Length: 166
Image 1 (spheres, rainbow, N blue to C red):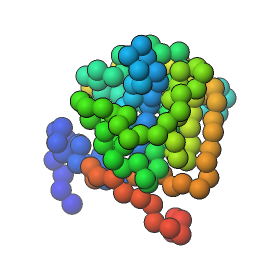
Image 2: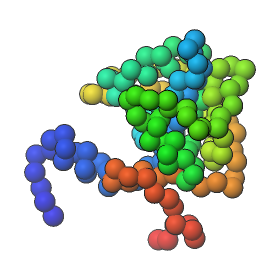
Image 3: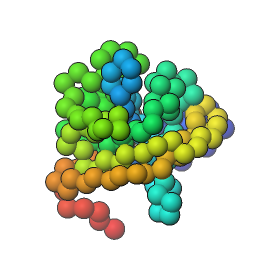
Image 4: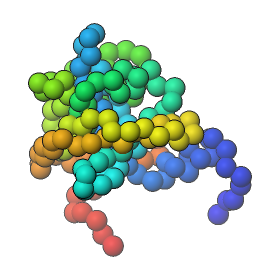
């Protein structure tokens, strides 16, 4: 085991040992669809229904999304590896070859994701180089046949069939 004072690269590598899902956060804006991928997503509360995401403070996308009345949060599926990379990129067409639908509220749902949450921004909290955004859930859709895309050690993977073994 190696112990050292934490620095940015060491923390990034260490945090990468914790697998997480990837969530597309998307909505429509004046210029068209806007979206990004986040790997820090967590349920916060059942009553009221709240979820949380963490967004880099340097993001150019979050200032646009945070001003939208409703946001679509789609848990990305195993088939969305390329889409996750595009949604995480700083430049380029993030919606190229991405199949999605826009709800009347302006929230965007990525097709084939196992779970979709339609949310509105409730509050934000500064958290170092990130912002913790707490979102109120207004609608949930589930599609039980696809499995989630997993982010682990700076790469995308999938869950093994057979479930969790303890």
